Length: 106
Image (tube, rainbow, N blue to C red; front, side, top):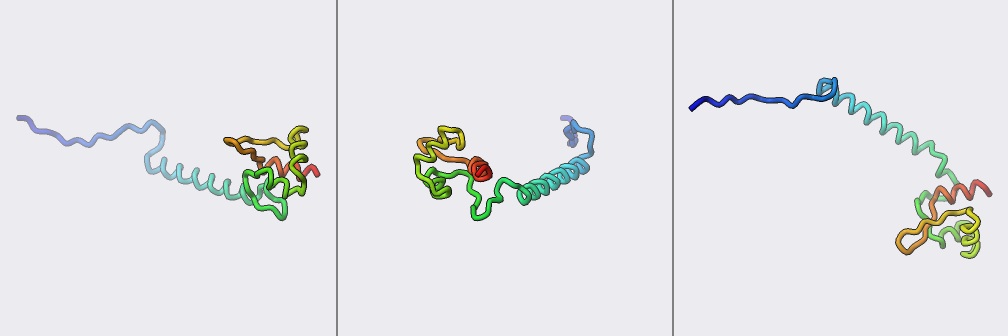
């Protein structure tokens, strides 16, 4: 019987960095993206209407309460393209950004 050699084989890296340098660069990119995301949230103009809390989807009754109008008025706004309804299963919702746009137009 022959002797068995225990050789450590390494998988070749397909990018031009040493593993430690690669991971350091990856960490740096992740940190930069986290900082960008954090800055983007604080300076975003999409959610700066005073008196409103951010909520991504609103039901028609909530939109009615928000604008102090009736359902037929909301239906009229949809018909004329002022608001876009989004149907999820059997329910209709309105996006916060669309509501913001309507508030800005008033």
